[in-house]
Structure formats: structure tokens, C-alpha cells
Image (cartoon, rainbow, N blue to C red; front, side, top):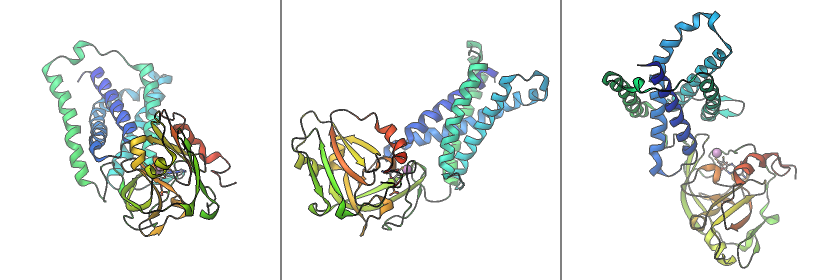
Amino acid sequence: MPARLTDWSLALCVGVAFATGLVGNNAGRPGLWWIFALHGGAGLALALFLIGKLRRVLPRLRHTRQWDRWTIIGLLTTLGVLLSLGSGIAWVAGGTFDAAGFGLLNWHITLGLLLILLISAHMIARAKPLRRRDMSGRRQALHWLGLVAGGAALWPAQQRLASADRRFTGSRVVGNYAGNAFPATSWVADRPRPLPPADWTLAVGGHVARPFTVTYDEMTYSEVREATLDCTGGFASTHIWRGVRVGTLLERAGVRESAGWVRFHSVTGYRWSLPLDEARDALLATHVGDEPLNHDHGAPLRLVAPGRRGFQWVKWIVAVDVLTAPDLGQAIAIQTSSFTPAGRGEE
Ligand SMILES: Nc1nc2c(c(=O)[nH]1)N[C@H]1C(S)=C(S)[C@@H](COP(=O)(O)O)O[C@H]1N2
Ligand SMILES: [Mo]
């Protein structure tokens, strides 16, 4: 296969894996399984194209006199590809790894992001345009299709060999219907002080006719939802949650005509929002199974947003507000909340 076709195919595989990785981190509905299939298929095709590339360039690397400063970037890029692929394959195979508070799937994501930086630098220095003659010819086309199809065919085989009980997102199933006995986690490191229900209130406001504040005992928690919390760190847990329907609070407040989004605020500053209709049907949970939520799982009140990934299930909620437009700052707030005094548990 022409060198340039191999190289651009590698770039394409990395691009598809990157895009599907980003989208996959937000995907929680089973209908989106194909995003994860594309991610895996792109990774496996990448591995196949990589064999050709390494066979071409590794022998050249012996001539150290011909190295230039970009050779190091090329080598680091190779290492980045191998580690990204390796961590992904190891995750599917049931591997575990823990370093610096990061599990294997978190490392896979981190390595993938690093790889994007490296490969960008490598391509700026080295990429050559793809010419018509790199893509013409029946043999070349068949060879190329063979490698892409190989990646696509390896994916289901790899899934079959995968150990453990996994969801379509790749998350491992743990602690279903076990009350509070499932993993507790944070996006960064939120660890607020406990919020005793007696001292806690919930404020409902924003684009509503009648903003109000309620105490814990003023609400009834009789609404139930069965839903799966699926963390992008790689675990998933299904429970029957109990609490108050968001729509019940919104009806009392009287949502204005202009409203389109509902935002959930944690005491730490962590926040996320959902489109109005979806938010109405979401749950503010006080209980998991038969147990009151414990502190680590967000007591006294946490969001249960079926079909959304875990990072959107805001814990330790103290306020809900109705918005007219999406909240663009939320993506930053979830990174910074752990560094606020409340997020550090200092106030
Ligand atoms: N306030 C707040 N809510 C949060 C988080 C956080 O860091 N702070 N982490 C989110 C993430 S990443 C996940 S996966 C779930 C974890 O919920 P659990 O600890 O009950 O398993 O909570 C979400 N809600
Ligand atoms: Mo998470």
C-alpha cells in the first residue's frame, strides 16, 4: 500500500476514534450503541494499518544520523498510539489498573487526548498530501477495504471474548439493586460536608412565576424510577430510585413561556442542565432502593436523569433554576467545583 495512503488512513482512524470517544462520553441511550461500535472498529482498524506503517518506518530508525527533532515526536506518537490502543483493548478484556486516582478507562481517555496533541504535531511536521495515484488501482483499493473490514470484523469477535458483565457503553455492571452499596465517585474531586436534611433547603427559581424555597420535610418523596447510573469512568449500576418528580416542583413554580432548560445546582458549584421536557420527567432522588441516599451518593437530594451519563446526575442539590437558553458555563463549572471552599468541604 502507498505510504501516504497508510498514513492518511491512520489519521482517519484516529479521527473517528477521537470523535466517537467524545460523543460516546455523552451517550447513555442504548440506541447509540453504534457510536461505541464505531469507536472500537476504528481502534482495531488503526491497529491493522499500524502494522504496515511500523514495517516501513522501524528499519529506517536504525540510521540515527538521519534523525531530526521531529523524529522524537514521531516516536512519542507511536508510543501514544500503542498505549491508547493497548489500554482500550485491555479494558474490554477485563483488565484493571489504578494510578494517580485514575482507573484504566480514565487512562484510556487521557492517553487518547494526549495522542491527539502528538499526532497533530507529527502531521504538521510530516504529513504529505494524498495524491490521486495513492488511491487508484484495484489491488490497493482491495487491500485498503480489507484492512477496514478487518477492523470491523474484529470488533464483534473482541466483544465476544470480553469478560465481565458490560453495558453497551463499555461500563462494567456493579451493585445493581444493592441500595447504597455501589461505587461513589466524583467528576474531579467534590467532597462537600454532609448536608443534614434539617438544615437544608431547596430553592426553585429562574424563569418562573412564583419562585420558592422548601425544606426537606415539606416535600413528599413517592415518585419512583428505575434507571442506570453509567459513569464515564467505567462502572454502571441500576437501581430503583425514589424522590420527587422535577415536573411537580416546576408546576408549583409556574414555568414561564420563554423557558427551555432546567439547571440543577450542587452545593459545591457543580451544575448541569437538561431540556425542559426531559427535566420535567427526571427525578430528584432522596432514596436508592429502600435506603435513604448516603452522603457519598449525594444526600439529601440528587438528580436521576435516565439515559444520561453519570456526570450529569448532579449530587448534593440545593437549587433548581429554569433557563431560556442552554448553560454553556456548566462544562467549566464541573471542572472547577472541587476547588471551591464548599467543594473542598471547608464551608
Ligand atoms: N456535585 C457533584 N455531583 C456529581 C459529581 C460531582 O463530582 N459533584 N460527579 C458525577 C459523576 S462523574 C458521577 S459518575 C455520579 C456518581 O454518582 P455516585 O457517586 O452516586 O456513584 O455523580 C455525578 N454527580
Ligand atoms: Mo462519572
